[in-house]
Structures are given as C-alpha cells and as structure tokens.
Length: 258
Length: 50
Image (cartoon, rainbow over all chains, first blue to last red; front, side):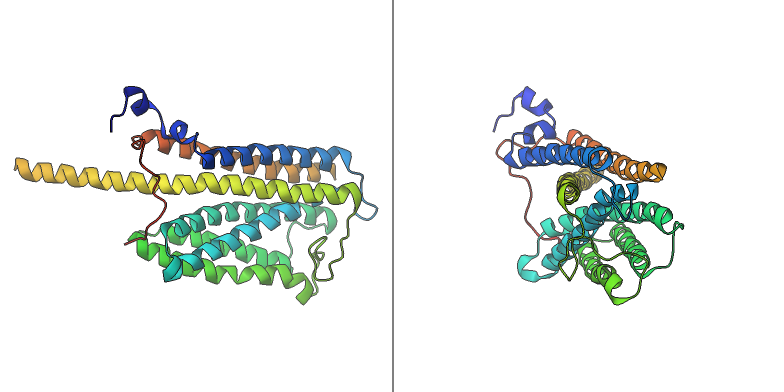
C-alpha cells in the first residue's frame, strides 16, 4: 500500500475526522455545549424564583443534573467492568470504557459535592454536615478515586483490568445507598424533585423544562467527554506498545553490534 | 445569596470546561505523536489483555 507524503504528514485526528463515529462525537459536543449554554441562560435569567426557595431554586438546574451524571458514569463503569469480567464478552473495549467513564464520573461526583455544599450553605447555613446523603456521596467520591488510583498501580494490563473491574463493581454498591439514603434515614437533604419513588414531580412549567434540559445537556457532555477519554486510553496503549517495540528493537541491534 | 448561586454555576462550568480542554488536548497531542495508520487499517477495537 502506497502512502503519499501528504497522508503521512496528516495527524490521526484529521484522518479519523471523516469517520462516522468522529462526526457523531463532534455533533454530540456541539449539541451538548449549546444545551448547557441554554440551561444556564434559562436557569439564571429566564425562569422565575420559587415560592419556597426564592432565587436559590436556580441551583436546582445544575446540582441534580451533575449528580445524575455521576451516578450514570459509575453505572456505566460498573456495567463495562461486569462485561469485562464475563468471559464471553471480555474485550479491551470494556476496560477502556470503564476507565474513561470512571474518570468523568469522579469529576462530576466532585462537582456534586461542591455544588451541593454551596446549596447547603445557602439553605442550612453550613458548608458541610454529616448527613446520610452527603456522607454516602463523599464515600462514593473516595471509592472511585481509589478505583482510579488502582488503575495506576503498575502491573500487566490483564491483571490491572481484572482487579479494577472488581473494585468498580464493589464501589458501585454505594450508588443505590446514596440515592435511597434520603428515604431510608431522616436527612437534611431533600428527597428527589423529579426522580422519587412516589413519582411526584415537584416542579412544573418552564422550571421543569429547564431542569429536563439540564439533565439532557450534562448527559450529552458526559457522552462527549467519555468518547474523547476513550480515544485517549486507546492511543496511550498504542503509544506504550510502540515504545516497547522500539526498545526491543534497539536492544536487539545492540546485541548484534556486540 | 446571588453570590452563592454564581459561585455554584461558575465552579461547575469552569471545572467541566477545564477538564474538557485537558482531555481534548491530550487526545490531539497523542494522535499527532503517533504515526498515521495505513489507510486500510481499522482501529483496534477488539481483543483481550494477555
């Protein structure tokens, strides 16, 4: 196969930009960014203040969507880990997806804690309290930080993937505990505004639509980030493999010269 | 009160933007540092760690 000089100079991003997957990724990013901008505009300037929470209700349009993305990301990490551990579906694809989603999940879980803390200061007067929802979310953050740390422990890729998958599944047990903690224990944290066992939606009209848009916007941003992070994981593996092959070739050349 | 609302939005938006920029930069720099694949080569998607 002949590769022209122009093709050889072209970076991978431009050669892959014509693939349908890359177009979908770009479209997801653009729509996600526009949706986040629309959520901020509606949330800060268009929606009315609430009768109970006043202006504070504006935090509703970012805090629950960010928390939802953290749960979603850890769910995807656990599902991908399960698929990796199951022999019939074992593939490096699942290991990469778990790593990518786990990292994005830690970012969103951290943002859930920070935005929740700001909301707590405004409503309860304290930045932090050892409430069941807050504590279980903080534990979730620490558990998945541990998962990311475990992925960095040097070992062969197969062992690393298996032990990380087990850790991700075990850590996921805290997600339902965190979600249901407001129903199991008496907590300062309010129950679900939209997603609750009673299926009672506590917001209506434009406020409800803005909240829904926030959920969709941050989910799209999550999908876009995972797609990029997955590509980074795959390219880093390729770079590592090529580095190893180059080192072996140099070593063989040294042996021949000696 | 409005300061706290602005702080909440700022923290979320700045953090997501910074992380996105870091991931996209890493993706592009890795893609540039590696030789281009042959035109008929498919990206490695399947396989199992040995």
